[in-house]
Image (cartoon, one colour):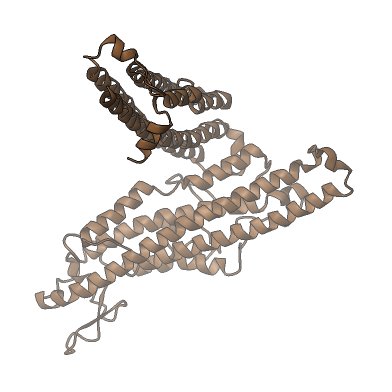
Length: 200
Length: 305
């Protein structure tokens, strides 16, 4: 039982690593998205002839400038797509962790599953937590990917407000509520176990 | 493309065999090509390192220029909208608006100076690029009957084209191909320099237009002392008419911008388009630039530094 619990708690250490990686990707994504957003907003200005003012004496300026900006934007889209692949890898890894845990507890009786000793969590709580993390990140991944694909398909129709709204959604990560994540970690890794993990 | 060359540089080029493929210099004897090669290889490596350094210098000068241009624009806009700006409690301080206005004007002057100095750096970088691209050849020094064979960077014997008879310097590329690659680079940067010059003139004149001053810059003005001498070296000053070559975008034909460089209605949008033009490096295909350097590195089997 204790062995089982230890094993599950170790899985949480892996989950934590994946979530740290997720946060890194998230900040990379926001900075790339920010670059893309400023290009998208600029495209509106670049589309209006009278904004060229003195530059109008240069034939080909508008086509070339728009072309270059769109090229840069496409490069940003490519790197965002690469980031999405990384996010997906994390989702798969969280899925595997949860499934492994399930496998590990196949033989456990309902009594063992619910048993709580001292401040330690029950096996069921451990399993539920892992499943919750997987679900959260999976939904968040799907949200991100739909935000990005709508941006990539319709960027030329997006207003500055639209882009700002999409960005806010990316920032908020509504599917991964921070307090809920913290609560799960507090339950699964009460102080003693936490020390054991950091000392690992 | 050709109209950008100076008479000076084109004359330098016609000496070489690439200008007229029919007049290929007689192949060197195996002995002299054996000696020519190491000297030529050393020179080519040096020149390409210089090209790379100058390219990097350009890149840092344009990105600094971009910062100064952006700051200049922002300061201008702040200053312009200052009269309508709601200063809140600060309104009660006597002369606050005037002081702020003067401060911004001072800052704008600073930005103008910095922008010119970045532009000056860009001119120097293009100048170095041009020089290196014209110094690829390796000529025999002294007469061929001398007991010691030496090489130098200038032609002494008119029958010596300095390209080792067109043999590959390293493994497959001859001097003239290396020169073509270098010239392709130089052309991109020269065009971009001319475009940046256009932008600099426009940006430097933004408040002159507002104040209705007569001394706004136009295309024929020298932006700093000695600019025209440097542009002449690069081949961007048409000697007869004393005009710098016209700015252009890629291969689109353009005409003399004269005094049409001034931004008639400087506002948020028009200035944004100017800044976007600055950052986009419209005449430089960075993929191609990278490709050229990597082709040369591969040829030399060495990393340029």
